[in-house]
Amino acid sequence: MFYKKFCSFIVLLCWISGVRAQLSAKPAYKPTRSEILQRYRDAKVSDSTIRNKVFKTSVSANWLEGNNAFWYRNLLKDSVREYIWVDAATGVKKLLFDHAKLAASIGRAAGKAVDERRLSLEKLRLGKDGK
Image 1 (spheres, rainbow, N blue to C red):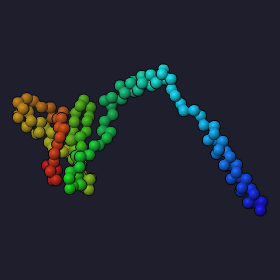
Image 2 (tube, rainbow, N blue to C red):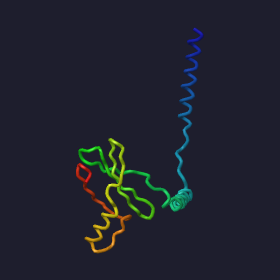
Image 3 (cartoon, rainbow, N blue to C red):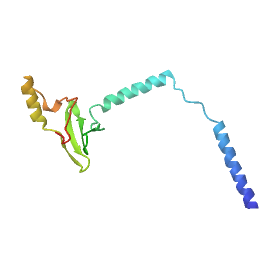
Image 4 (cartoon, rainbow, N blue to C red):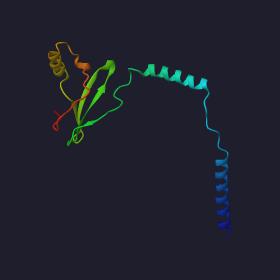
């Protein structure tokens, strides 16, 4: 009998403390205008400190239809771009194409030099075989 009363008392205490905790909720934080401006200044400094120092942070996969492979583009320092092909089934990762050869071909067709490190290919379409 004592055990039953003791357990009931503990449950009652826990319930009361939970109710009190919910009743004494603090008001939502509302920063002042100066605090908001200071945070924007801090973010601007942080952005300029990090810029051109962090690369390869994400992959936007372009899956090949009916295949276990995908390709993606890496944006590197100084706007250098590389295009990567990955076979997800085997884990093989390689350049999607020969960047120098493609830049030379585009340069001949356009009649001007094309930097192989800065190829800006927006709409690539590959066949099921990745070519």
